[in-house]
Image (tube, rainbow, N blue to C red):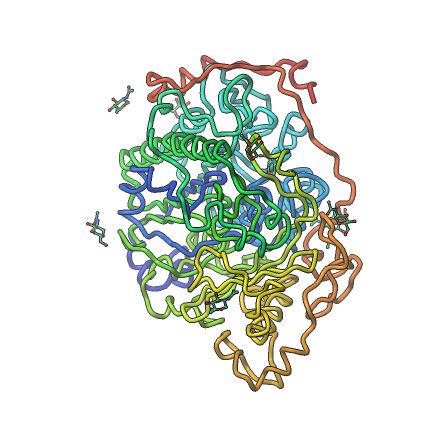
Length: 638
Ligand SMILES: *[C@@H]1O[C@H](CO)[C@@H](O)[C@H](O)[C@H]1NC(C)=O
Ligand SMILES: *[C@@H]1O[C@H](CO)[C@@H](O)[C@H](O)[C@H]1NC(C)=O
Ligand SMILES: *[C@@H]1O[C@H](CO)[C@@H](O)[C@H](O)[C@H]1NC(C)=O
Ligand SMILES: *[C@@H]1O[C@H](CO)[C@@H](O)[C@H](O)[C@H]1NC(C)=O
Ligand SMILES: *[C@@H]1O[C@H](CO)[C@@H](O)[C@H](O)[C@H]1NC(C)=O
Ligand SMILES: *[C@@H]1O[C@H](CO)[C@@H](O)[C@H](O)[C@H]1NC(C)=O
Ligand SMILES: *[C@@H]1O[C@H](CO)[C@@H](O)[C@H](O)[C@H]1NC(C)=O
Ligand SMILES: *[C@@H]1O[C@H](CO)[C@@H](O)[C@H](O)[C@H]1NC(C)=O
Ligand SMILES: *[C@@H]1O[C@H](CO)[C@@H](O)[C@H](O)[C@H]1NC(C)=O
């Protein structure tokens, strides 16, 4: 029975390889706010040695929203939305889960729970597949002192970082399965995550026999805010504070660009002043802190690999490394942060190691976080009939197993094995994560936009419509740093590119409200005069000029911080029931108009650096001995 499911799900090659063993385990490691474009993974020697050299690196992996909560929630549910915790749990597009920011009303952990979406997401499906599922680290923004006892449903075991302590790397407070809040005094957060992950791996490999999925989700290298220490950076472990003294924010061509480029951007970006020397020095300091902090993640990888080898299950375990969203450091004059559609913020690391995945290979096959849940389910062998119908993504397993196949590489085909276009969305406020943020005008309001990005070998573009009506178009083959806006009002190229923009507009119109197959294959809804289109190259045929010129235009009535269907009309196809019916994922979630805010106050403070050399190999027993339960007064500070 199990073998026949594997046969159907994985294809001959993998099924033969696995025939003698049990279902593969999955260890999923996801950092927070880690870039792919700015070289942070180059500083991770263990990542390079154990995962990149022994696995496949996917260079065209993207998130649909450059913010934690939306990205995390789409990873967990496989629909498009933007959840509010600067992270990645999504399987649906953010517009379908309506988790569009890290805080209410756009998103937050409470909104996730109130919408009922936590009753039907990844861990429940893993259970159905016969897997034990566990989660350690950061779940979603807004999980904190006031709601820690509403644990994230479905996991067989969870141990979650809680707000507001999550922001202080030297004050780790976690809730195990929604029970007591425990403070690990004298430890660094990343060490706590590592020690707990190893303890769970020991349990999963010796005390139970089910195949397992273990998510390890450190908060680093997200910016932290720490009492009396240089803040606005991820605080590295004490033993890593002197690493990489020469590391600095890469001076990419779009680092602090000249006025001629900056003024042609859109939204809040175009008004940013040039970074002065102190702003640049700060960006360098924070970049250095990030790569130092990631040394702690490298130790997690090192210990996880060693444990899997010790238990002799490394050959039956997928190790997947990624981040929730990307990050920028001076690109487009933004000193630090995410939330933009540019490559730095949305293109994220993805490295997969497994005996069924080729070693030391780099693949440009496009993928989305949206595709992760279907991929995991295909790995487990759960029959496709048992997958939720609301998936907006598709399994990447065929690409993972054959990443250099020409069948998979032809990204210009809208159908088949690859993906030509991805859409990126954003709603609400955006911030600069630097001490000068306020001076520069952050947090910015009215930062809502919609983007379509073409990742084809022949067609490589990014097109954005801001809620203000401003548009940006970049030729990402000729202009990979996205500097020359071909749609700028005073650019003669704007008219030259009109036919192209009309096609991109139509794709964006479909993907801004797509569900399920329309998200996987937006061309299936675009048939000028009954023609069948499968790629942008085909769609650019001048025969179709008039049809695309007459297509509804993506627009906003006004700039709102939330996804309002009226504000973003028209739709294509039209919503079948604008109020409470199908469309925008509403068939699969409940309305959430009243969302209680979950603020909290840190009453425990420290100005110490933890994570000493001696703590590199600290045991679970030592960690437990240093822990204490939070008092009622400490919990009430919310
Ligand atoms: C929405 O609410 C109804 C009634 O309370 C409930 O039966 C249903 O399960 C909920 N749906 C979701 C997705 O939570
Ligand atoms: C796992 O089993 C060992 C040996 O039986 C036991 O000492 C340990 O407490 C168990 N661990 C858990 C987490 O149950
Ligand atoms: C990985 O591939 C590169 C060339 O693509 C080669 O130089 C290197 O030696 C390979 N590394 C391993 C560990 O096989
Ligand atoms: C998430 O990102 C937003 C926008 O950058 C920021 O304001 C917020 O503090 C972040 N939240 C957490 C918990 O990191
Ligand atoms: C440099 O720019 C920052 C804003 O990024 C501002 O706060 C600071 O005052 C400026 N410093 C000088 C010396 O001009
Ligand atoms: C117009 O397009 C051409 C060719 O892509 C490019 O070289 C030129 O810089 C563009 N001009 C402007 C003002 O963007
Ligand atoms: C944001 O958009 C609203 C609605 O268009 C407008 O009234 C307001 O002035 C804008 N605020 C800023 C700071 O641009
Ligand atoms: C999304 O959530 C916001 C805030 O709760 C709500 O006002 C809006 O109607 C929702 N949009 C959709 C399409 O469900
Ligand atoms: C930690 O343990 C490893 C392997 O047992 C050892 O090689 C290393 O020296 C230890 N590090 C410290 C700081 O104790």
